[in-house]
Length: 138
Image (cartoon, rainbow, N blue to C red; front, side, top):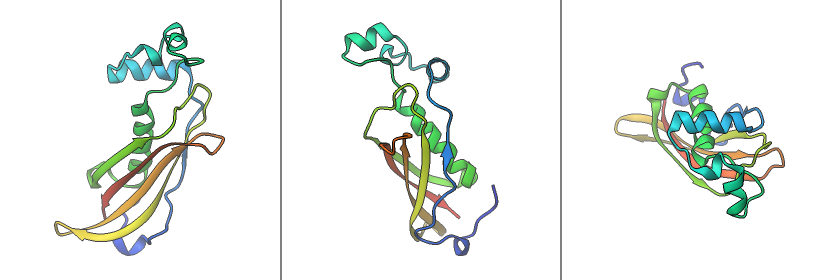
């Protein structure tokens, strides 16, 4: 990660994409333990099937954490001013998630130069799973 200035960043510029290993049961179990989110829909195949799903699926917050990693690979986490997402699709076992971001605005707020980013996750089929935005101070 290099220290960026507002002059080095242009509207329309994209962040280097972050592609993760395919989602597997181990990842879901580890995330459940780390987040204390043991919702059975994410870890118990019998429960998931009773709920009408073919199998367990990833926690939405796992994908949001991946987007957080995308941002903190680009800038220091202390520069993050706002970060929000909307879950628009389910991330199933075997999905290979890629996180992307694009600068949509440059502005000043509270005496800081900032950029607004449009961020998202998509699976290997190009299907969007999460849409969001973030504000970063430069």
